[in-house]
Length: 635
Image (cartoon, rainbow, N blue to C red; front, side, top):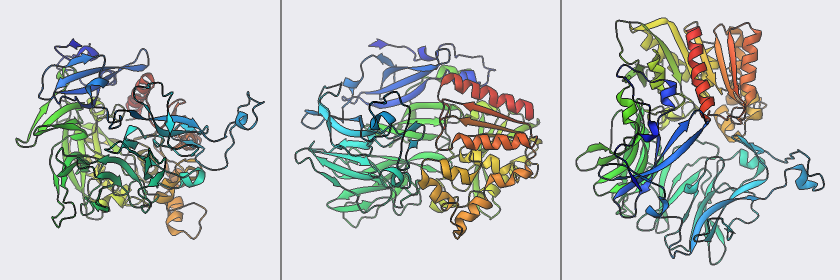
């Protein structure tokens, strides 16, 4: 191990003068911190720092430890032996893992081995592609090996011949499977549906496999929605997150505890949705993270068992920041990852008794020390239906209220994603503000963190009240003397990109420019090409061919941006990922073609090897430069 006095090696060259502001180049030199856990002796935190390398077009990672009470960071080359391995069985014999297994015949050579050079894929149902990958007949299968078998040569598949996945595709990982406390069973998450049924459902269940009997039991057969994130309490009670309704991916997420044969919903009476949870070390309460009022905070809920003690949810932290993960506990402290609009994620501790924060990792402190910060204001705007809406307003560094600034309306994706104090390496408010723009970011209808009713109001109403919410936000901020009303733009991705396309047809000359990244342009062709059909079924109200379905027909006519193109009159920049199967490339092509044929100044930027996001460092740098180049040209 190598002792470091300051953890700045990975960000060398970032220290800037006091007058400097954040730029895309500086942004992509920041270290990206991920906490891995607390060491077995409880004294240190293990974490990873990934640093992008623009020249090599990839990222390199290093690992460190830091004392739980603060101190100097130490670089380590071997870290896994420092952490307790929850994937080793209680008796130490077995290691829980997963492996990709070929199950289905899909490729031409699968059917005709003599034609091994053929390049053909044959499907009898949907789920032929997902996120950014075509289905080649392989599935993720959970299983176990003898402990220490790093090559998985002794892998025992507990889902033999099943055309299902665990971990779940595309984003599932090791959180999708766990050992039972006695090591005799494996609990895992899977959506045991295939083809078209898979594409139209969100019904994942928890399954329990017994190592002795080789039998598998569905633990949640009566719940039609998502069952995810299985964990055990210190008292060995199975706990997980649950959504009730099939097909609704943004349903209220609740904490369920199976206690003495009864399933206890700890958060059913709380008007919010849970992101993730962790049991307290003594098993008397559950700590969880959830969006609230434009931030993500730490909450706790007591566990009453089967007693008549009331279940009480209590918010623990508050402030202009997000807590992104709970790392673990150390005495009276909880260790978390925390971020805000001016700072990428770092590791902090929070003292429950003293109610005080302490920053532990300081990976990017040297970089930020020389960068002028943006000021973030929390504003409440009255919507057209008389509701109070939170709007984040991010002001440029060294803001001068006597000057006038252009403003960007930021349209969040999802559509039901929280708009909080997040720190993105693409949609970065700090970078945007540093280039001289005021950012207006409304927590419009559909955002979690403002009650379930507000969260659900956007489904089947994509072009309704939410559009009035956007316009209420920008109109309210534009009244300020420091906003240049002649220089307003609207930007966004995914549903935010849809919002841009829709606003382009109804904005009544409010905006001077638009930028849409991977946005939905034609709801009818979107329904015919997107891969998770359950999403469009729920949010659009059903298929476009159901003429007697009033909700669907309203979506495909009144709320379809393609139907308002005749009203477009404003420059628009369309960005699209080539292997984005959530919002396929045709959406961007249709929008750009419409703009070009109507003689509107427009630009089309395609990333052939990127999905719904932009992940490669050099591609990300092009995105940033073209984003601000367009704004300079048009705003």
